[in-house]
Amino acid sequence: MKKVLSLILAALMLASALAGCTTLAKTETGDYDKGAIIDMYLTTEVFNFDPQQSITDDAMLKYMSLMFEGLTSLDENGKWKKAGMKSYKVDKDAEGEYIILVTLNANRWSDGRSVQAADYVYSWKRIMEPDAACEAASLLYDIKNARAIKRGDATIDDLGVAAVDTYTLEIQFEQKIDLDQFFENCSSIALVPLREDVITRYRADDGTDQWAMKTTNIVTNGPFSPKEMAMGTVIRLERSSYYYLDPDKEEILDKYVIPYRLLNNYSAGNAEAQLLALTSAQSFYDGELPLSARAQYASSAVVTDMMAAHTYVFNTTNPLFSKPEVRRALSMAIDRQTVANLVTFAKPATGYIPYKVFDTTSGTSFRDAGGALLSTTADVAGAKSLLSSAGVTSGSFTLTVRNNEVDLAIADYVKDVWTGLGFNVTVEAVKGRANSDDPVITNDNFQKIYDEGSFDVIAIDMTMLSPDAFGALSQFAVEFSGNGVDMDSDNYDLYGHITGYVNEDYNALIDSAFAEKDRSARASLLHEAEKKLLEDMPVCPIIFLQDAYLYTTELSGIKSTYYGTRDFKKTQLKDYMTWKARTETTEEQAEAAAEAADAAGGN
Image 1 (cartoon, rainbow, N blue to C red):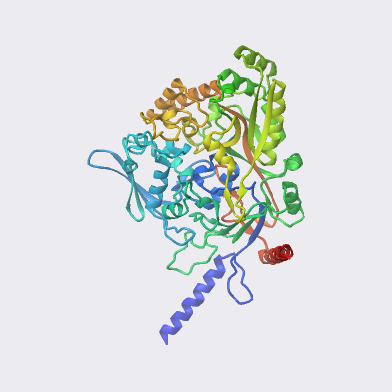
Image 2: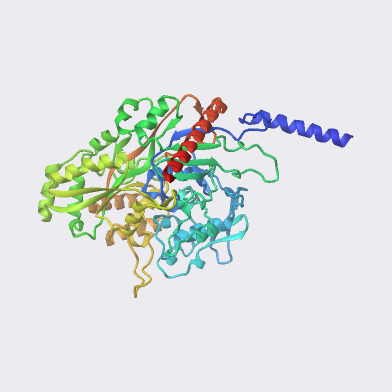
């Protein structure tokens, strides 16, 4: 009898505890509901969810930060803090090499399997494979044998990372390193763990990885996981059922993540319609305000700086852009303040590295320390004079951009400017495509064009890999580009940056910066490298990006990361059951309409 009473008392205490610490409402059956469905317009559409390819698109970064989690993260002040890492200790092996042993937190992937040390090992080795291309490679170059592997002088099995046991990651270094700097780098979305079994299972016959292009293939270790991707209609994220929840305990679903679903609705077809939905209480969050409304909402929007620059990348192997003078002239003719005003939520780029990137330690700004290297106003006369001295006063080329409102508006402005210099410029807007027999996204043409270097000039959102300027600047040095080795060449030639840019003086500066372990001295070398890069101008930074969003009073608990992305883990929707009933009714109506349309088409 006492045992029965104890069980009853324990059950009552559990029910009381759940009721006291959950945001979930109860359904008519007495069970707890799953949580709020938040209708929103997070950002422009994304067609690939591979975090190691997120450097060229700020929209992609916004999704990745919701779906994946690395060893560390950055707080609002840029200080690194533990995320996937529970603890670490420093050790040395018999040969005196510097080692850290990282113990992982108990987390699980969205399919229920535990996040393991082997997942980090696989992810980092995937970046370091000598025939792989990933700009994030230099973030790992402090690891034993990393550089040798990337240039083809050692095998991938020589990389100094290993899974000591299921939840312990061993990282070997060839010398003592700045641990704070390394753990800052570990906050990069490019260094999150990945699942080898999933990626290899969905590898196409041509060797390309298809796992990150269909929701049925993707597993994530972050708070949310994609459940639906329908081009032009919706990207639906749902709370991971396993994110830090203990499988041996009966824990509430919203213990770590409050919203059940983030419904990113594109079916209205444009940003103006999404804004209208927000102001008419049919949506709760808008993170991609239409250009036409930005001035109107500039004072009421929440604006955060991103560590990203909208950048034009030149193909320097194109004879038209082979001379630095030509590239500098094209840059000089652009009025960056005009572009920033056009975009509203942006600052004119005064260098390659944005303001939030550290100079030495968190709290310092590389941009402030380096000053303005680019003019924010146009010098058309100077541009024409420079072109004349270079012997290039005309030519035809294509400017490739993503098919979204902001990129196209900037491209139209720049096209007019460059046309005024005597060039014939064609703007090509590229978007993802859908397989003819599958409505789910299967490819990203823009990324393919960029990766293959099959462009004249291409517009990207150059997102900083980490808060350290080295990662962004080093990729223009051949040994640090991350683009691997030509395994078919006799000398195993290194591939340089996608621009084709090669400068021995620049290579030497980056090599010296890598060897220098004093942060102040290293920062001085990196400032020299940035000056050299912008003198040669293989890339043309135009604006530093900002993220701006509006939200209704029904929402609370929205946070921003240091990278300028959103954190919705603790976001609450007031009286969410009422809104949920409306949303579910709308979804049922949409499904019925789709079924009716299919039936009509069949007849």
